[in-house]
Length: 312
Image (cartoon, rainbow, N blue to C red; front, side, top):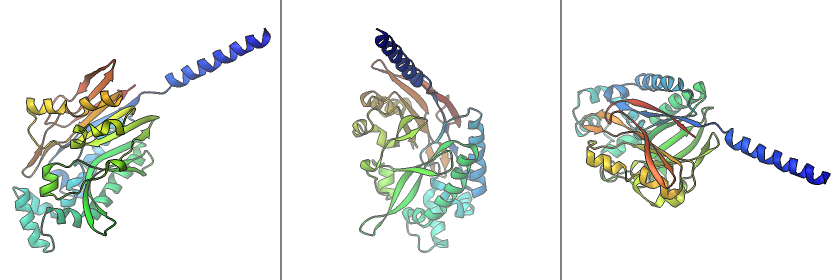
């Protein structure tokens, strides 16, 4: 009888400890930056650093575990050396023609991004790594065009997302798999591999990431099944019409339910660079009881805004 009594007490304590452990995991706090870009942002390394630093300082008032920037945030760092040309050019094509006169070895846009890929990586480290360490926060700095040498010794250019942890260490890279027509035909980017993409962990949460067009593909549902949070970083290069807003619903909101993921955050690029422009509405969607609901969203699809979100 005494043994049975102590056994019941032990079981009760174990159950209480388990319940405490589950309920004591704090909500994951995420700051999603809907970044608005322009030529001034990429006029110098100092300009880029100051702007990103200011946004991260604003995010830190929320004390987030993770700060997210959208796709293409770091792409145009590659054009900083030509800021005086960019200032006078009206189009990407016009700027390229003037840059080619200065750099005869550059024949097309792809060459330009390959030529300056080392500069981009150095700036990314000096800005995002330093700020992540300084503020003690995990940061996804959007994406940039990174070079990669294949087994055949060929060099390819990838649209690559990156994550620095709260100590400033680079802990994750992921290349876009399903490229847009502009990325394939104009920029001549190469696709990444789905097998190289894997969920990562922040604050005890299993987090998945897809890059813009990737998120429209149902292939990822099995790949990321059971994750706690799914991130979609976007650079939507078309006007955010009602039809485009409807297409957004076929991306992350359509993925998280079938994948058994509890929540999803979309972070969008806005603004323009020469004759390129982007619009999109950042948002939080929640999946529960067989339904997916839009829980929070940006007030505008064309202005800069930060969403402060807590994922329970």
